Length: 266
Image (cartoon, rainbow, N blue to C red; front, side, top):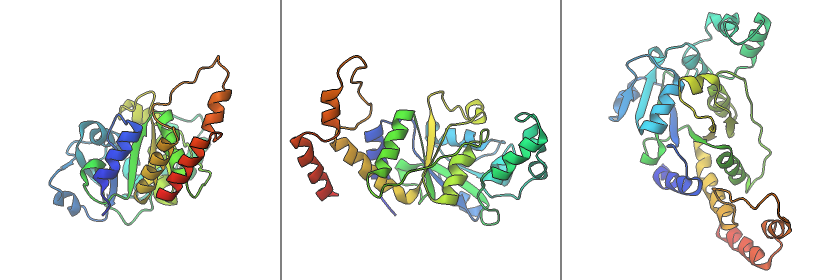
């Protein structure tokens, strides 16, 4: 098992995150929830985004079974239950979000979910405690922190990343999408996550496969060594940017020596 504590502390150091990065794991057996002595199993009904907030803000380890959820959409998205009838016919989303039933059905046809049949429960914990080997890691932050995460993941083996937005139920765009593609998945928290999960106005969320965390931390170190750090300092919108551009894009001998050093260390 990787040293999740060390990696998380470095992640928090480079990004100055406001809330705890989350270890997220789907479980094949409900009994595994009870094997973790720290796990608080939801007794009252809750939404997934409420449980996420308890982890990232309260510093709790939480777990949920199918019957823990207040809405069938949460366990359906996680692959814990089959597609509900009100999702199949489009009536669930049509109540609030769409003018026509046809648009609601279009939504449901493109809504990503973890495949049904394998998992029975979900467990989440602050990653910094080495709680368990997670499937994916959830990180909340502002847009500046998110672009640095993306830059850090791209510093080696570059790939142009694609992200999605279904609209409401944004949890599908980061959790299910990450499970399905095994790629980083960034999105904007939806109305429901702000209403019930208390996501803040300036927050975005990204899910990354757990095995990518080490690459992310190395990438952040790489960028830090080149002067790309958080918080991002303002250069000034009414000054000649030439000196700053020259330095930022590799025009000095000092920068070139530093680049060679980091490539050798990595």
